[in-house]
Image (tube, rainbow, N blue to C red; front, side):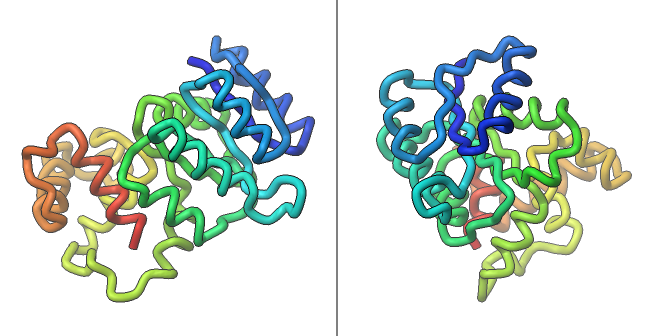
Length: 213
């Protein structure tokens, strides 16, 4: 796997690069601005971009806007946002873009290196890895929630799916059987209108439907 890192804090950028190298993951480029990210993506065609939200020159949302541009240019380059902030407007656009390979983690809530590396691999493979706090803030913006038809348990299952948990992990977290989780997920798919012809992508599409509202 080859990644591009866009992070203006030099020590953090070097630290992430070292963590990846220890796992045999190559950093094709490590840059400090949105413009440099776009140039690096065009030059190196990475498997994943790890991106901060606030970078030079205005330190508002340059990184996230550059990530969206990179996905447009490359045809949905997997992007893992690693930031201190939830920039809600562009986060919704990124997370509801209609394809997988997206993640949004909050730096201060990443407490386990193994979990972070799992998120890197999952997003690069086309999955999702969303911090629950990001989900909460994005959902708080929504009105007339189209997911109101889900039961409380189904909502809990979908929230855990958004974090990238497998069915087995969801069952363990909720202390229910694997079969119960499968039943909840089947109900979620049905209520969201995701028929079996979308089998390969239903899980990702369910999560994206959840996040975009």
